[in-house]
Length: 122
Image (cartoon, rainbow, N blue to C red; front, side, top):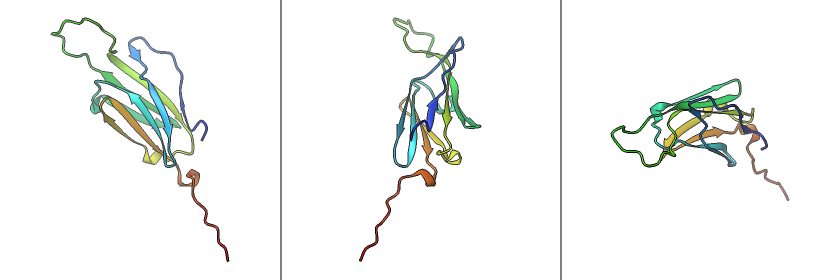
């Protein structure tokens, strides 16, 4: 399927970062994997409206009573948006956060799933 899930490119607001994402396809669903190290499930807000799925939230600052030696880990607000095609059953979208990766499950509508057609013969 082409363009069933398409990342929305937008400007990065000050203090907001865009997490990296991979989009994968299986016969049953599209998967969007977002890199969110250090994020807790309660700090993520998912919203779907008019064909656009948005992911936003906050990466909290780690303990302050430490001495930073290097700072490549981004903290603050994050935001990412995806345009979702009509082939996706929006009522069945689900998400899980595990080991710093947010996985969005976007099930395909039954009508677009591949199916095997049996051939009758004598």
